[in-house]
Length: 545
Image 1 (cartoon, rainbow, N blue to C red):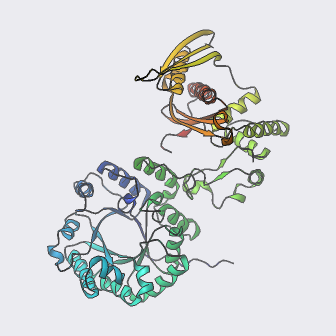
Image 2: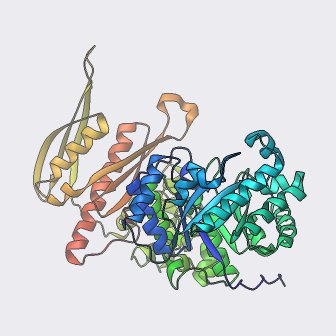
Image 3: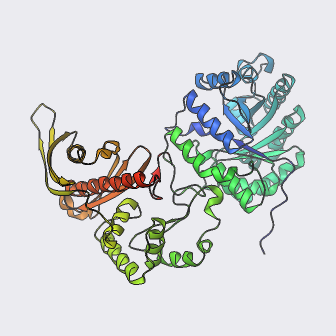
């Protein structure tokens, strides 16, 4: 039998540093409104502490704390934390301007980073080991005297401990004796492994102060290292939503929380909050403008996605045979992928998700063969659920002919020294009305889109809401050069949800046209569905998800 986790401590801190350490990720830039929005989402999740940034270090963070102090956001679950550094070498904390910025931020809690690695003290701070300890003590005592609670992050603690354990522990002791409530042990370079973390945290427990853990993911072990520290006795875990952070990122906080709540049985968030984890993670990703990782544990789009036919057969019997938790516990959902690896069970389950009865084994087998043949030709339905639904409707004889295309052509003209002109002509019939429409655009796909939209609008005004929002091309047989088969994926939205269609061909324009026609056909089908009974199909992904 596996060993049981230790009992939950009487007090346990969930500390989010998305707005501070997470914002150091390459390409991630947060405005003050962004930070306020994310803080509100973190508070909704129910974390205990939100580290808002470093007041005094940059204008955005200073403005954020000013806005929070002025009531721009009233936190219901979390407490705001201001980050700072120990006072400067040779200066009193009371006179240090950076310490003053933390003090004057009006945040109830200060988290102060301190050096705990002897070589960093001597080579980075260029001071003595004794002065560094005095800097820690003086800063903590000053902020405590000014009414703030104080946490101390011991930077490079684990690397420092391995080189000079006595001094690393002295840094912890100095913070504790000066009044720090929690001393956080930081794997700043992210190079530790779980057994090393456990051993060193166990040794640090001798100081007798509540300990925390702050890990980075450079060795791919940030979450595992955080859990190893929890096993060794820490009562405070720091991390970032979606694993944002410098280099390879910080410990992904939602994974840590989910593991502790669902595997350890420790209630950490307000009741029911964990079920909002997927929604909130994706909402935060929208604000940061960093696409969420589909393979992120627990909350990723692919976290509970099944592709192999063997898995699908078992899932039909019991969904938990190939899932470590019920996806609903974190607000996610099981997804059945359709691909060349699919078996009949995959197709039946996916069909049921979309509202089609595929219980007839011969019918399901025929559709499975049709999917495998199409995938062998270059189509992909795991990335294009909308095209898969259209395939099902065609095979089941449930696809109405919304429009019939008679011909289309694209003409591109380039004149030296002038912009390239692209024009598309489409002839089609919709609701018995024949249309011949010319569309112009910025390139052939844009021209095709304009022409098709204009041709359909008289019969179907709903196309006005449809908009192409993403376009991807992939060469499938690169050895063939310019005559290679290409696959085109088009994502379309109606303003409420988004869907993806696929086209394949040796002519990139032809492949694009196929995907584009399917995109409009799918949109028209569901526009009619919404008129009859407003609802969003399961595979139409809500915008922002």
